[in-house]
Structures are given as structure tokens and as C-alpha cells.
Length: 96
Image (tube, rainbow, N blue to C red):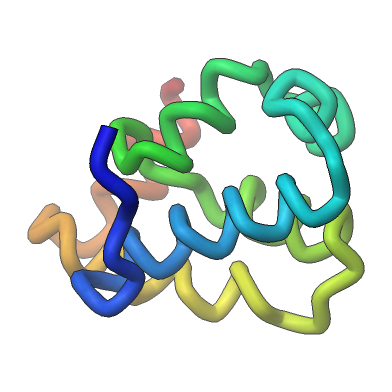
């Protein structure tokens, strides 16, 4: 699998640094998932840009990695890049 270029997009930047920080801690994807109350497969999906993180995911990642507003401020940019109508991602997150 090709490595992610963090300069490609906000989503790529998030994915790249999510994986980097997780590996620096020595955590597996399931370990990180349990720390933020999601599955290891969701962590994998976010790292490979196959899954879009929610605002809650970003907030939980900031807490897990003891980061002061690193992932959370990226969330609006990630949403912007999706091209979905305003409010739709929050609706989909609530339904999902």
C-alpha cells in the first residue's frame, strides 16, 4: 500500500498523523480503538482514508493522544472536502 502524502488533503493529513502518533505510542489499531470506544477496523479505515472520522472521533483522538486541539480543528476541513451539503454529515453521524 502506498504511503499517504499528508499535503494531499486535510483527510490525508489526519490519516498520516493518526497512524504516526499511534505507532509512536506502540498501540495497535484495536488498542487505540478501545481507548476511543470504536473498532480497530474504524481506526484502520481512518488511517487509509476509507472512513471519515466524526467530530466525536476527533475529540476522542485528541484526548487519547493528549493533544491540545490537533484532530478536532481538522474536522471542518475534512467535511469541506467531502462536498456534502451543510448539516448532512452531522445528520448521517446521528443516524449511523
